[in-house]
Amino acid sequence: MIKVLGIKIIDRIKEAGLTQGILSRHATVITTRLGFHEVTDELCSREAYIILHLNGDPSDTEKLSSELRTLEGIELREMIFTSEKEPINTGSSDNNVEILGILTERNPSVILSVQKLLTSYGCNIRTRMGVNEVFFGEPAGLIILELKGDKQQRSLLEKDLKALDQVHVRTMVF
Image (cartoon, rainbow, N blue to C red; front, side, top):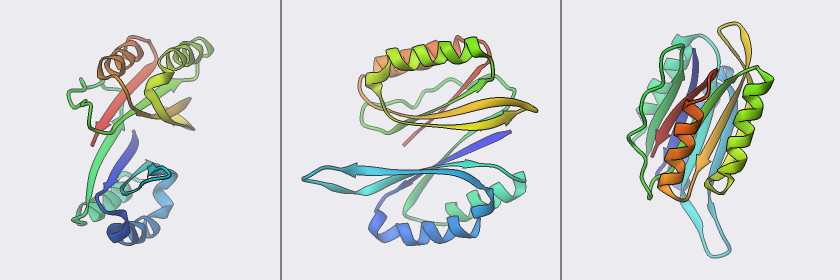
């Protein structure tokens, strides 16, 4: 099993310290962390997002999730990759942050197909992170995307990825 947590911090100035304290206590199960918030010349958003790629004993990762759920100023979502069929994404919305998780088995033709799809939908990918992973004892790649733009195009990307063999797709929406 592979677990990815998504955290939406409602007010990062107020809640970031509490969130960081919990993440520090559970650092041994966090393999990768990606944080982002909106920043322009005119704006520095108080809302922030953290994506965590977890690895370790499932009871330890659940302790992290449980402790985060005690915080009032955050929302928590998770993606779990197992051998089960992918659930249908029904939470996409134009105003929300949509995170897409893609687990690809190590097969050169599969990797090339995924890369071609990501390139063709590139205008809908705002943030991309890739990490190496092991899935049922075999090498795999985990790609985390923050999607933006046209809702129909984001849905088509998800549908096209799910049509590929040896590709597992999960979503989380805030």
